[in-house]
Amino acid sequence: MPDVGGIAGAQLKSFIERIERLEEEKRALGEDIKEVYAEAKGTGAGGSRELTARGSHSVAQTTDHDLTRSRFHLSRPCEFRA
Image (tube, rainbow, N blue to C red):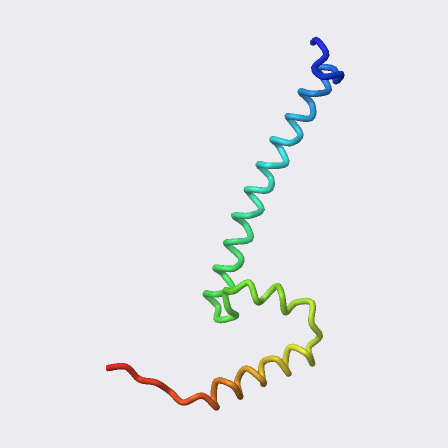
């Protein structure tokens, strides 16, 4: 193959094929991640992206965060709409 912009054609083709393969793997991983979030939501563990954000916190930090959120929600008056 002829050179394209100083890059041998075979090398350029190799780059393109690798990028296409990685893009396909990325799409497949995205689908897998969606399935895991749906599974977590179905078991009551939650389905939000907050799960992964909280994963890096210690148990004490997570428990403190949960208690703070619970107190906040309990302290707010309930609004019922008819």
